[in-house]
Length: 153
Length: 153
Image (tube, rainbow over all chains, first blue to last red; front, side):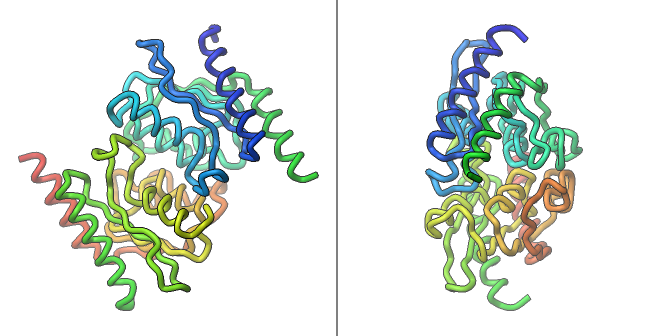
């Protein structure tokens, strides 16, 4: 994993931390156009703030990136997210034609890439990104563990 | 199926027809609060108009309904949609805690309820709505067939 990918994930972790400070589940996501070396969107969970169960970091990042990209298909663009996407977000990543998905920690309970629905493994999935796992996994997991521990105390 | 459900699906079909007239894939969705006998949202596909691959009828209907409902969990609310939801929308329906899902035509190619990811059958799915299928199925199918035939010609 070269420094470019690590610095993008670093940015996503920063967004996740900021989400925790706003009492949102700490997940951060960014969409990058690697050819133009341009960050198209920076997002984190906003389900509480927006009163919207669909306002996950990845969905918001895809929506914002599409506006910047000027088209709803983000061909050639990559998405970095601190946690394994849920089935909703994984399916959205497929619909948006993301080229590469980089994610941090696995989500055994609600993930939709390597767990449960395994969105990209289905014959109804019409676009599969290349997938890179485990980038800064421990830091992402710690952020989530601290967040949920602080809510229980 | 009583007349109340048929009239809600009738409304969703009207929204789907209007989408076709705007060159959007003809799918319509509405969210209803049955206790208050109130329609919370009326939506149809807007992926082309909004340049957003996630702007499916169901997702937009859930987002608008959450604003009206005043909370991101639509407990007790029902969703009517003319086509079997894709995995993204099925997972969003679960996240939003929709009570009952009524849908029209099956979607063999891209559906996520009875096909492919079968979102509500997964152990990572934390809320399963009651599901009612095949309401005005033929009319919904015809709308879609006519739409795709007109684009091929």
